[in-house]
Amino acid sequence: MYHYCNINKVCLYPAPPFLSFQTAPFYNTPTSFDAWWDNANSYHLTNNASLLYDTIPLSRPFSIGGIGGTRLVTHQGYLKCLPFSMNLCYYSLHVTVTLFSLGYIQRNGGDYHPDPTRRSSHTLIYSSPHLPPIDTSPLNSQNLLPINFSSLYQAAIKYPHLYYQP
Image (cartoon, rainbow, N blue to C red):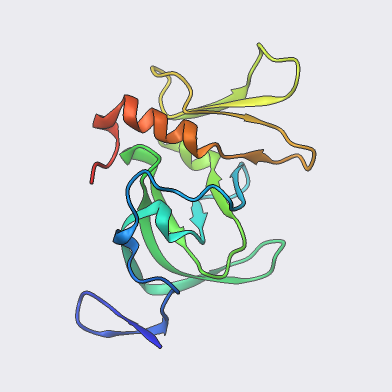
């Protein structure tokens, strides 16, 4: 089955297995999936369509490589849980985790650094140097920084002028 694009043509790649990117309620994000802050990827990447809005098929899908092998990226959208200035995200049904790029956050006015007030390793993630952190991520036993979506959505509620509103 192929995805029918809004621009009245048939795309040449399989449709993602969901009805519509726009059907998910704004703050109703599943929490039982792997999602990590990552300082090695250039852009945000997800396999979870409910995180995105204004999603469109890419005119030229592209492949990305990594430890899991090569994966085809087919769509781009915008993350509901990050400010406008840093919320571009690519979608691939074939990636196994969601990765938010700390480098992309930093290139677009945000920052991240260790939390000096904690004895265990936590990283503070900021969307702006003038605002409180949008997430405080504890380094887990696999040396990964989990994304706390509840924290991200609380920031969106607190500073709605910086975020997409449905």
